[in-house]
Every structure is written in structure tokens, then in C-alpha cells.
Length: 246
Image (cartoon, rainbow, N blue to C red; front, side, top):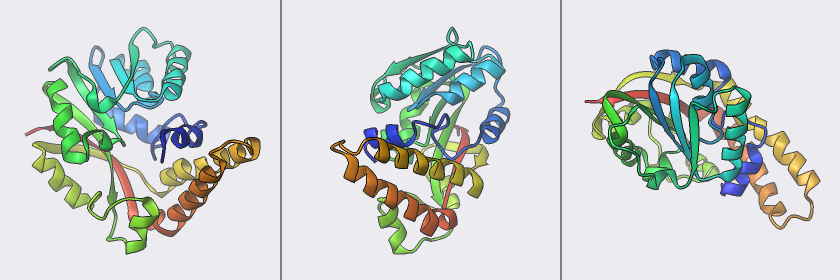
């Protein structure tokens, strides 16, 4: 999905992953956050995680994202929750971001491991910014069971892009970290995320008939809808994993 399509589809979302408010709150609890902690969130999207956790736990944070559209929404949300003095945002390629070494208690990349060309590369890229004893939060899809060949085409991924949940743990181990905790999406949170795109995209198509991308957006909507109901609900899982250096 192009960045523009991503921005259109998620214009009505606050959380840009298959997590509900309840699961985001649970992740904050299991991550053992506390006042004065610093978090770097790579590919932060609209920064709902940073803003919510700053409000609830008193953390400070830096969010990095390539989308100016999402970062504008992040700034509005930070002001709305009155945490704009505690969080700040930088526009740019999260995969190329030069973070201060060993400066953060939490480094996160939730659902965007393409920034490091995959799970292992992203974990290794995140580690230099992490304080000794700090944690990583990594969101990643996995296959609940082996999908049929059509699923790879439907989601536009190569067979090796994702693996099973156990295989995901193996990839973390290979990257030099251990899994301390995890919070997994369920079918309902997947529905709320993916199906939430459909109405938004349908409205956009109705309201922008002359846009040069209208046919591509229409195809994207139909492909996403079909992929979710035919394969996603049965085969595709997603979770955020709490990690620490081995």
C-alpha cells in the first residue's frame, strides 16, 4: 500500500494497527512503564501510544514518522491530551533516524518492521538507542497456521516474510533478544482495524471521483476486503512483543 493510500484508509483511525484501546492499555501495563521513562517510537503514525502513555504513566517520548499527515494528527492529539510538553515528533524515514545512543528506556516499532528490511534487521537497528536494562516493543504479524498459497498473493507478501508465532520467537532469538511478554490481537481487534478502512475508503471514492488515483484506491479496497474475510481472519495473527537483550 502506498503512503497516500495508507493515509486515506486510516484517516479515521487513532491506532494504526489491529489493537483496541483496551489492548493498548494492557500493553502499557505489561511493559511496566513509569514516570520519567523515555520512549523512542519509530514509525509512530499518529502517536496514540506515546500520547496515551505519556498521559497515564508520565513518560516522555519522541515519535518519528515519514507521514506529515499522521504527524499533524499526532500533534493535535498531544495537545488534546495536554501532553505536548512531554512528547515531540520528527518527520522523516524512521529507518534512517539517528537516535542518541543508549538514551531510551523503551524503543518501539509497532507494525513497521519494513524500516529495517524485516524483523531481525529492525531489532538490531533499534538496540543502539536502548539503555542498559531497557525494553524493545516490536509489533509483527505471524501466521496462526500455514496459509494456502493464495494468501501470500492476497496480502502481497513473499512466503518467507512472516512465519509462525514460534518462528517469530526464533527470529527474535537470532536478533539477540528474548521475549519477556506479549499482547496479541484477536479477531475482533483485526475486524475493527481492517473493516474500519472500508467505510473510510468507500466514502473517499464517493467524494473524489475525479482523483487520478481513484481506480487504484478502488482496487485496493476490494483486495483488502477480500483478503481479510478469505484469509486474514483465519490465518493472520499480530502481536506486540516485549523484548530485552539476551
